[in-house]
Amino acid sequence: MDDFPKRRKHKDNPYTIRTIDNRYYILFKDGENIPRTIEVSKNIFDVFNQFELDDLKELNEFDRHIEHKELSEESIYNRTATNEEGIDDYIIRTSTYDELMNAINQLSSTQRRRVKMYYFDELDLKTIAAIEHTSFQMISKSIKQAIKNLKKILNK
Image (cartoon, rainbow, N blue to C red; front, side):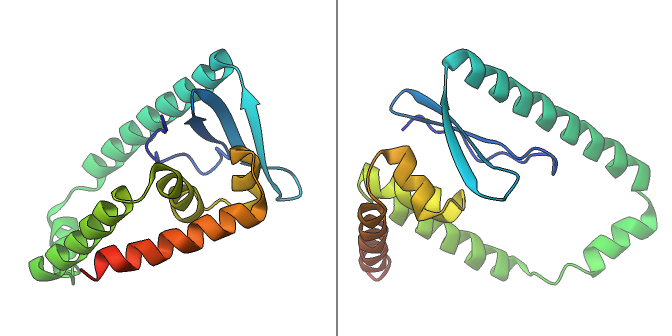
């Protein structure tokens, strides 16, 4: 799967782009809030990809501008004083995340792809089935088996 990393996007950008087996898709929710998936040409996909990269660049520039504008002795103190997470909590949280990602990477490519779409991209089973050109039941069974496999890997 030639997937793109999950990018931070502007709140007004309703699209998600994906590539699966060298096929290009745009995912979005229509006016009735129903998830839709459309296969598009590489040229259209590249336009959406460039839009996301440009959008991300603007978001980062805005954040840097606001960060420098608000940087004062009081704001620095407030950040450190309100940070309740200690270094041990940080290590526990990140190692748990790393362990989960390691376990996900040990799944078969099909299970890994479907788990990422379902849990990380928050797509419903029907949408995943449409993308994968298979039945809703097959996706459900695959994700349930992946969860069992993840439990086995994480309990070792």
